[in-house]
Length: 518
Image (cartoon, rainbow, N blue to C red; front, side, top):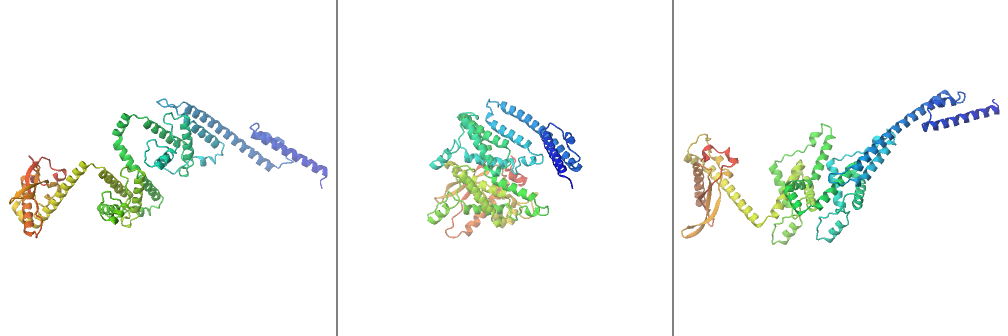
């Protein structure tokens, strides 16, 4: 057995070796000594060769990592210095500085330093990632602006709404962006937006740019002169209407994009079953959606002496026709109609874009008719009655010709290019008919209404002869078959000529003999 003195010697040797290891490791970590210098302090009698090799390998790895971290920190410091220099001197063309956003640069530099301090394997997880498109991010941030920022143009008779607007964060629009009031608003918006989970991963630079652009827009519009506003409105009215219309349907675009993402994630064999398909024609879809509008939408022209019917109409969804389509009241109606129509099984497979277009056109029609002046209404009604008369005239003449085509074809005679049967059927188109103005004629010393027709100059005499022949047959048939109390039809008299060229819809479909080339 070993003696006590030999055991003490071993313990002393081990203690010295451990102290030597600890001291050398500290010197390596401090960057003052290479791991190879530690080797002489180890005694082969106290440390096994295998243990020694493992320790030397560990020190080599530590030393290499330290050198890499030093290089990364040096690069970060260089980039941060250049970035700060750029942020400190950026001035726009109008002399307004962007120093209010220096805190963004500082935060960004701090983030870079933190990333450099991480191990290489951990750094990729720190890079911001977001699944939202630029358009979706913009829409969300605009909603936050509307929710949190005071609107200096807001007007309302509702004290609660006015108080709500006044409680929001206010830009100091009489000062530049780097004023303390505006910097406070910027910091608040930045913190609030960055904390939104739906915007997780959005780069801080994107958020700062959105806030900066919001201030610039508000400042510019706040200080516009009346002349500048009039000029801008005149130049941008058409584009503004289009943009405001489509903004209300941003949710449709988002839903469509989500559908496309879902389709892309499906197996190829499953994708065809996900493509919307419908067996209905466009006309059938329009009729069904129009019926839903009648059923669900308030009719501002509705009048009735029945209180139940009036109450039923008042309970329906109402457009706010004093506001634009992107007003919150109208957006609520749009979302309701979209959900209701999309849920109809008879419209299964109808593309969401078709539904959104129908709703948009319904609002535009209601808004336009609601704001028509009495003169515009009278002109539109007159035009509508004229179109109705010409359509009815086209239908009646075509029906009379179909019942009497043999006699009419014989009386008109053969013309080159005519088919053997019903040679003149294609001439009875609505656009080929003419309208006139009602007047009074005296028949048997009694006044009677008649119609003075203005014939278009493009119609040939032979075409006019055909129409007169058909009208005479129709009038005779009507008189012979009229019952007691039947209201006689107005006589039609060619009174004037209406100078006009042949409509484009007829120039290719009518035969040459029907058109007056003079």
